Length: 179
Image 1 (cartoon, rainbow, N blue to C red):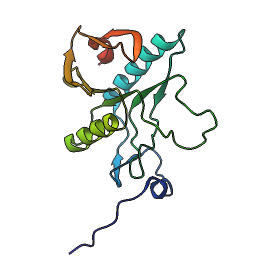
Image 2 (image 1 turned 60 degrees about the vertical axis):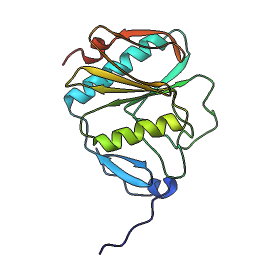
Image 3 (image 1 turned 180 degrees about the horizontal axis):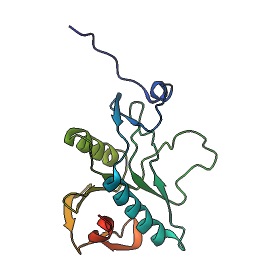
């Protein structure tokens, strides 16, 4: 019988050796390793980044982060593919992990288990993320998770978050351009 191991804290996790090209995140004290993103994953991630940056370019309402790890609790340090933090929420003197939840987290589904993905969605929302956008490249669909529930969007339906990013309204198909 194998001995149970205690969950890792974020500080313990940060001391682990890093493997080049391997993404690791900590969820509920457990380390999850994700292989490098394949082309489809990276194209969708790039499309989300581009659309968000274009929206924010002149307004300076938010920071668009790519692959940034967040310290959400003692045992949780997830790393969404793309995230948005509204201006004024970051501590300019902080030199460690960002110790707050992003306003929007984007996850592009490629290799994560359904259980891990749903756990991360709930984790983001529990810690104050206002919207989690989960993109399924093969289905060309985005699921929008908010405290009020979940919506499924596809095709020319607009992805928007008026309570978070005023003026951001992009057809879902734009996030799958180039596939």
